[in-house]
Length: 394
Image (spheres, rainbow, N blue to C red):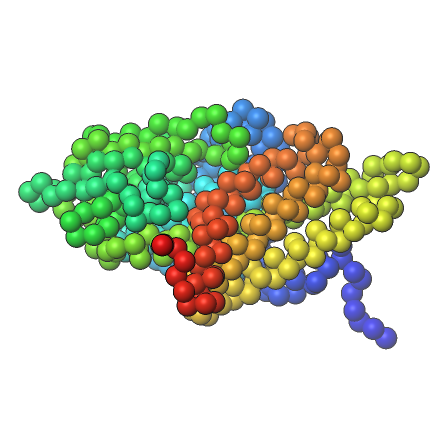
């Protein structure tokens, strides 16, 4: 007699079998939190273009161990890469803005401090960031330099033993609510990272309004007007672009999982709608073209999840390369946005309504597709790895 379990439309490849009990407990805890604290309100937050109570949400996420969760010590959970990925999956299944809050806090700001900061930096900032009492941001992108961070104009000059920072950063998640910013600037010694308490004179973070994507997320400009910092504000372990780029690679890993969360929500919305909505005397699910759409969405969704699991296991084994992260970010964001677009066609006109999650996720993914490396940049990363020829310049 066969012991094969019944086919599960929500887990057709049996990927849940790849998880152990602790993995499932982490996933289920965050899924339940998102269902209680985010899903009842997210359409309203999105429509208003606000993330109210962001500091309270951060503290709750800290209590779940979701902030800097793959880091060890200093109040961090020390969880596996797969568990961190599952958290990103569940948070983005609710909304990309919530996952972005966690990614920037843990994979960019906290990761930079943990990997490149002094012991004093770690002791001062990481415990309060892990608990969510302090929110962090990461200042790399500039108004005129996104994909080419080496062209940054923000600079830091020596003045006695102090550093004085001047410049602007753009599209900075968490900027207006952050208590500390990790800011990258050009110096006579090359590009360096600086730990900037946001109450330092000369620092401001006006919020960016009128966004049509990531509306339930705090996005800001950072303005540094002769910001004076002590000598020990510099991150001692990072010099050159290798520092910020390694932080971006860590954040991209979370996106590999998170994008599939948004895709999963849209697929499930389309599947449920197709079963219930009747046209021409039968459910939409009874039409061949609808079934073809659902089948294609399911294939790409679960291929993406399988890829995310594979990269997570490699990260846990210490084997994950940056090019492999680019592979995952390129594939999963590109496929996720296509799944959302196809799901919208299944829902017809209802697909554009905030009563359903599809258009919200689709527009959010337009940002996810771009940040932490555009499609074109990851194509070039992989192209260089495959051919040995650098096509980034000239």
